[in-house]
Length: 293
Image 1: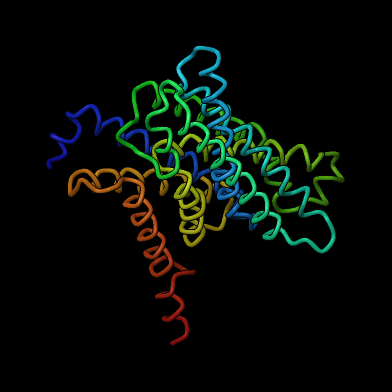
Image 2: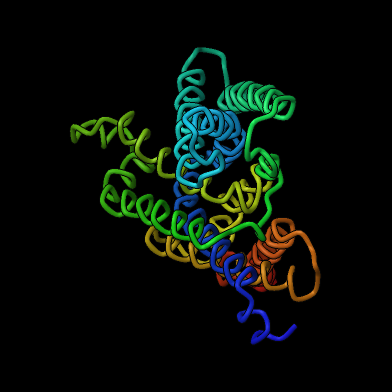
């Protein structure tokens, strides 16, 4: 399939731009989770978003509204995803409970609740329930113009929060004690940051699936870290790599497929990470070998 044929097809174009936006937003905001050594917080968010999506579906259906409306599902997913992050941090503050343990407990609990709600939906005659299970593994071909608009607006809002609170996010990430001395409430900053990361994560669940969204938040920052030493450079490059990997993966999955878009994007992001790990100046394995010799 030639690029001309690809971009002349509405479905392919929507999938391409939709996943590109998801990759850019998730990559940029994922840099802060990476620097805080909480990259897997996106896994908590994505899995904990499932009950929020399904509860939003049930609420909208009960009100006689379209159950799979993008805005309603995003709000539901962001609400439970943010709640899960806050709960994780609260549990981690309990003595003798590690952060990874808190993540595992909260993730599995919310995901289990989501699976119970999904079973309830599947066993009852709710209208418009077909395809609701796509949120588990994603389906980029279902992205519509309305979905793309919703992703652009919500992703833009998440990035705007990051820009407006840039100083606060940076201080809380690198020097929490200094931030407290300046009168900043780290808990409020954390809530704002994790809400933004939650939004960046949940906008991709419908297209990529909650199982694979963690790669969009983790892999681009890990690759960008090999090339740059500054926070602005890392955030910008992480967003660029996330968008580039998503765009390339979507094109490859369709042009040489049909192949599942989410897995192909994840593999593409992993290849970008490997190239960065090997070839990046100063930190790459090739440079280290030259220095060692």
